[in-house]
Image 1 (cartoon, one colour):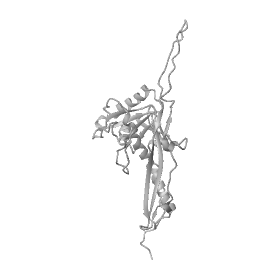
Image 2 (cartoon, helix red, strand yellow):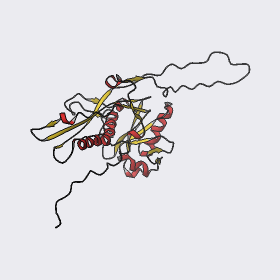
Image 3 (tube, rainbow, N blue to C red):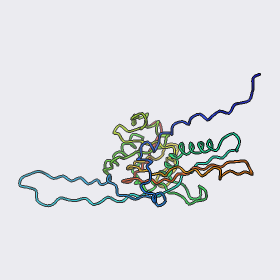
Image 4 (cartoon, rainbow, N blue to C red):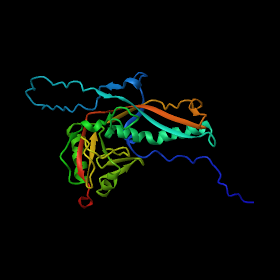
Length: 282
């Protein structure tokens, strides 16, 4: 006799992580020393000094002295935590399966959280009652507004070039990917990374808000794009507390939490531009 009961089967494998910041940044890397996980990182980059000096080979010999450039400004990255959670009844899943589920959630969502930290941050009081986390792009230099996506990409790449930035990145919401593709401004490289025709990586981050450095909102026809120097990401191991200690026996519920500590730095600065993305300008 046929049964009409549905059969509980193992969860199918998770999809790949969406394309985003982890595909264009350096990292996530392990923290170089254990103390950095709690205190953050600071280092002096080699990519931001844009001095170039020329001299003519003539006769008689050139007199005078050569000019020496100074050291570059330090770059810092403050630590912040990313959390994913999962709760379910004790019946149906083993503790090992519950832990795998919360780890999978972390693997699929942590990039989005780091992208949010980079772009708009987190408003005060909006997460667990904690203080706000400022976005790293809030200090970006604002360029003249662009009338179309082509001008926006051109201005951002020129800003990177004018400032001698090596390893620069362009950042935009996923909404902009179709507009940049329609204008033939991007191409796929190595089956994963998206770049401009000049070779600048373009990150379409799901965690990006499209807002301006001062929180200027996205409108029906405009939003912001950014260019930055290299983005460096450090991360701790994913920590999941012992699930035997997080079971509520009175409710027959298990509560799982995955936590990972991150630090992010942006080298050489960032530049913002408001772009009109109305299709009539494509």
